[in-house]
Length: 285
Image (cartoon, rainbow, N blue to C red; front, side, top):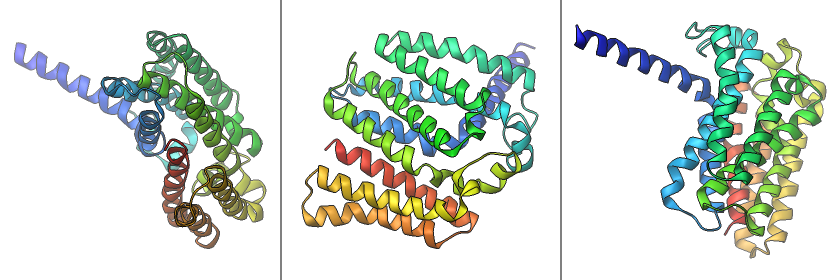
């Protein structure tokens, strides 16, 4: 009897753990891993013992965002992403809503344990989550959508880097890198929207590929090319290193411009993440 009860409890815990994992599944490669690596590289005084704390902080904050995002986008998910927890029936809308708001104080208290500056990063992330999801910025003007995403990533980077370094403040190099990454995302984040164009159109979002389809792909190419050139000049790279660095941005931009199917856009977005990561990490050398 006791063995059966323990087995049932373990099964339930594993079920709920998988449900949480499925909320975050699509953001491991775009948020959890890149930002954790960024924080490790950017930390002024890296504390290796804090690495798992950094990963946990990023994970729980992206969970907060994803639960909120998937509640407001459940109809889209029923059509295009039926394996997500709510459309798959793993969790009800009511339960997801409770989870969404319970996560806010959990994130804030967890952040406070690392200091006031980390708490402010968490507060800003929570505010941006409400603005982007509940207040509808995700479906608004594409400029607002891009800028909100850029500020969100900057907040993630700020909090994660503070934890990785065990500091209350960041040095100039880390702050500059965060500003640069936010600028890149604000001007080129339409790269993410290319692969989601059909779902976004179905729910009335106003992304750049929908509003200005003839501008979207060239803007990615131009944006990445300009940022690559500008950063190569800013960092005073030697010719060979500059050409190698710029080739990543040009390759990614050209791929978006020339290869236009949804599967191609998904692959191009992987390259986009590589391009952004290389831009952020090169600043920290």
